[in-house]
Image 1: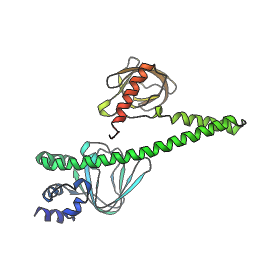
Image 2: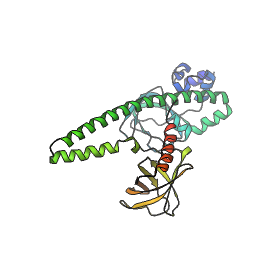
Image 3: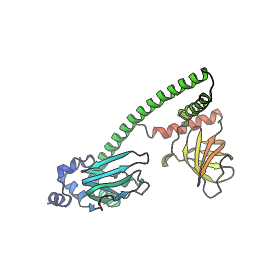
Length: 298
């Protein structure tokens, strides 16, 4: 009875639902329980399902039609049914990192994240199967991301070597107006692409703060060995070109710093750090390594 009701409501059989990785390990009865929580979502052509930065409050089941996901880096993905959309965000409280637009008339169902969590409390076995599938999907995503990062890093190293060869060639050649400008551009790009300049965002488990002068602790938004960006809360932020000094708290270790303000955008302050003493370089690199290990699958 439950399976028939599920098929009638969603227009999908249990076998079709299990073709979706997130639902593959569920029994017929468990699928029916999850299906009972689905409600129809607005799915007119051109409708925006969610925007970048929206709080993720629901996951969606695309049964028919097409949904296009747009990223801030102009990357797009076209999804066709059957497919689950936004499951990680809905269950973790993360904000959306893409914009979902319905490309043609579609049939879409949604489950509020809070309702699904309530079901998990009542049905621990169902929750365990759901969690195992979610972890498998997350593991697969991380592995694919690592392969892409390896390719990107290899291309970056190759590009760095080529730019250094071009810079050396320009140094050995007769000076011209063009060669002088090109040398400056190449030298700047080579410095910017050094690994020590890669910035990371402190995760909730490893927060960092910047206390400037005698001010309060400001949350660090991004940090690298050569730069730090922090949110200036409650005080007038410094201006571009100003010099700042303060202390970085790196989830325990404290590192005194000074530097030049590159830019201030609203309450965000970007600072180019002066050279640190060796003992503080070790502390900062240790902190950056701890953050990077959160993205490393071993």
